[in-house]
Length: 208
Image (tube, rainbow, N blue to C red; front, side):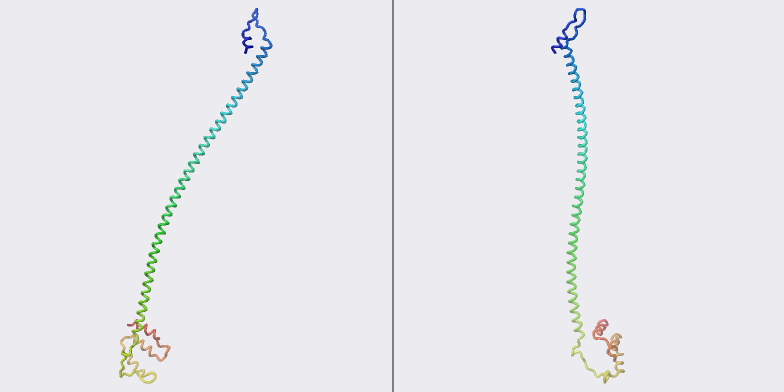
């Protein structure tokens, strides 16, 4: 800088011509020019770095916006999934409550059926007891006591089979055709053609 100040204060020589710059001045000018080029290069390098920094900043901002958008989209998806899960949970709770109600209804119906079965079993037992008593009473009704037997002078026949003609006349005196037919079958000479005692009791039970 002192050299520049010294160069700037030089006055032209007599006759109007400036003196030729000295070697030091030329060297100093060359240094200044070189420094100026270096400064320009640094400036260009700084501008390039600035552009790169701005580019990186823009990329970072773009990535940040993308990340924010992705985060918002993921947040919306998570909220939607949460709503779906809550809806499914409510549906499952409703189905569970309905199942509990059906189970309660079925248990009540089962208790009612058990009670009905118990009542039916009791009714069946009473009916069986009544039928058994009636059967015993009916079987006793067919027993002829000695006091109910009356001896008469009428003779239905003599010999092994009696008098068939006389026997037929006695049978014809019966007004009940069912009893008349039953007596005729009982008087068959062939034992296989005669009805059994159970058959006789059944037919008499139906005819009485």
